[in-house]
Image (cartoon, rainbow, N blue to C red):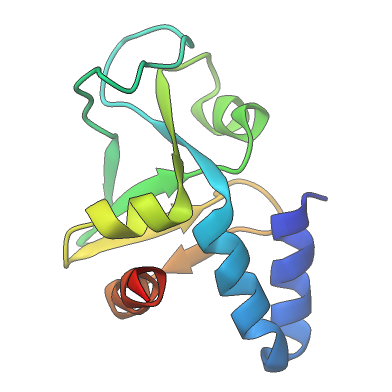
Length: 125
């Protein structure tokens, strides 16, 4: 279990742990798959990238993973990625975008646009 898994488990058991979980989300470095056929080499900060957005059930999802291993397991092959802190992901997210964090693992979580807007506002404070 990663620290993010543990924080989500505490939050699920008791909502009083919500603030700690969201704080960790904002400060976690996420591995975000790119919409490219690139190999597993991370991109440089100066590179222009397009994250992979997955469409499902009429929603657009940005995929977030708290480790390269989880990203590779989900993608089922080495894939290009960018690493961004959660607060930066929130800052760059568009209004109708959903997040899918650690999809395929035991502690996956969907973030809805209102939740992401709240995270964006919280990170700006």
